[in-house]
Amino acid sequence: MFLRAILRLSALFCPGLFLMGCVPVTAPSTPAPQPESPSVRLAAVAEAQWQHSLATTLPLRLKLGLPVRDLPDVSWSAAQGEAEFARGILGRLETIPPAALTPDERRTLGAIRWQAEMVVQGLEHYWLSFPVTPYASPIATTHHAFVSFPFNAAQDLAAYLNLLAKYPVFLHQIHAKLAEQRRRGILIPKAEVPAVRALVGSCMVPAGNVIFTVDPDRLRTLNGVGEEARATFYRRVGEAVQRIRPELEGLLAFLGEEYEQEAPEALGLWQYPGGDAYYDYLVRLHTTLDVTPEAVHQIGLREVARLEGEMAALHPKLGFDGTPAALHQRLRTDPAFHPRPRDPEALRRRMLDLARGIQPELGRLFLHQPAAPFDVRRLDGALEGSMAFGFYQDPTPGNPVGTYFFNGSNLEARPLVVLEALVYHELEPGHHMQINLASENESLIPLRRELQATAYTEGWGEYASSLGVELGKYQDPFDYYGRLLMDMLVSVRLVVDTGIHRLRWTEQQAFDYMRQRLLDSDEQIRTEILRYATDIPAQALAYKMGGRHFAQLRREAEATLGEAFDVRQFHDAVLGGGALPMGVLEDHIRWWIGTHRLEEAR
Image (cartoon, rainbow, N blue to C red; front, side, top):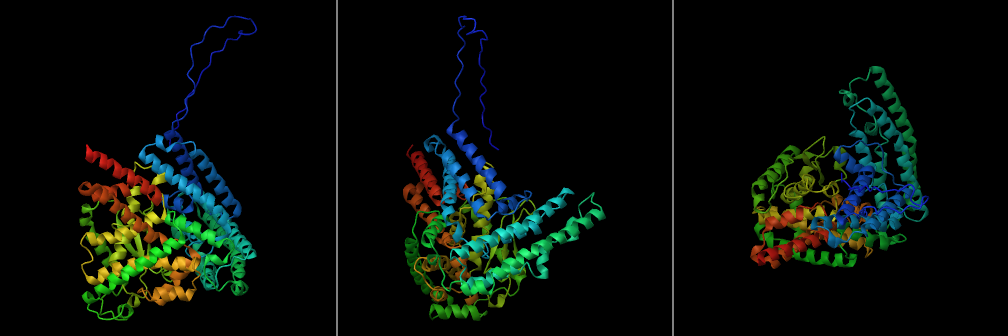
């Protein structure tokens, strides 16, 4: 919390001053109220933004272990309210001169301003985002709130029932938005509709009740609650689930055969009213850079061409003489050509060995490492069909271990040549290091510890994966080829994402381009294409664009500082402020370079 100084003034009063005509006694001068300093005003704005985020952001409450009493509000009125709040924040920031702030405060101001501007600009595109696509829907996070709901006291039973009663309203809001989108001619592309129905329908099957019902084991530590009260709770949970079912059935029926027939064959935002402007906005949102889709497309083409040359030059070291397509086919179908772990537990051990193996080397590039431990675990089976790789889960109060959840299915058909590069991206020195150095940094205000600018977080993971080369890793040429393959994936994304949304590529065009250059299976590629096209357009641009920006800032610092450049200090400057928008980070690093030049000149 930030404390605001309050100046209390006292005034002199002469009761007979005018009525009695007395000559007033000259009062001692009273100091005028002093305006709050820019730093105090910024602290107040930051605190207001933080408290608002805590109140309205379900993933943040889950991460921090705060009570969940509300579900996401996806309505138009809620979006208007968010934009109005953001306008108020921007108005308050206008009164704060950046030159009067410390360098760290300028980072705070820049981050808050960027976030608020994106919220305000995003309002006009509200009707173009779909609330039910697998990667983007708030449904999954909402379900996590139910399955992880803690029962520590008797009042938690009533709180859970209250939350459960809000779920039909949440579903109704989703249904209402989809209906209005349909009226406006904005429908989910036909290729994505089955995946959307599967997401909604997963709650309809008997196993879906597990999301809302409460296993008795979750109440085992609940003292002071008798059997009668427990029985009443379970009865009311059952009644609430029955009220949820009609909303689920209605939503599923809405997304049925008639909707699918009406849905467009084409992919891409260009086909919707205002779609081109929305994509321009999303490119800025996810890259946090002032860059056009056309420029991103050209960067992607150049990077793909560069990587094709590097990968072809590596073929002799792999003991292979043939085309890239033939090499990839052999990697997919011949386990003996590149041996890999054959069972999930062996894969888990291999990933842990890689992450632990790089830790002793990190002191060469970093001044600090996070205190939080890390682990690797297999994904829940229900998620393995829709996630090509997996995801990193931040530590939480309930589980203080940062965990990478991997896809352990169908390992005999899953080439793992990218495994080493993936570990460095997800764990050390990637997401685990970056996220936890920020969250453990008590010198940062809470808002800054929890920033999640996509280009920074995913860009750091890509940049961190490349640092393995600098640290003497990727000694096996297959592992280095895997590093190039990962770079190829994030570079191909620049071409395909912009190709779909700006150049009007078909799904087949996108598939052919990816199939020629990647090792992924046909199913994985088609899943990736739908992710770019309908789930989270432009999000996939953040990996390469962010990674390139980290590398560019480092080259600029090296060129300017020369022998005075210390990569450990550079990484400390980059990682010390939280996941900032790249423009804000760029301004800070240039200030950092300037201060080091002055120190060197003294």
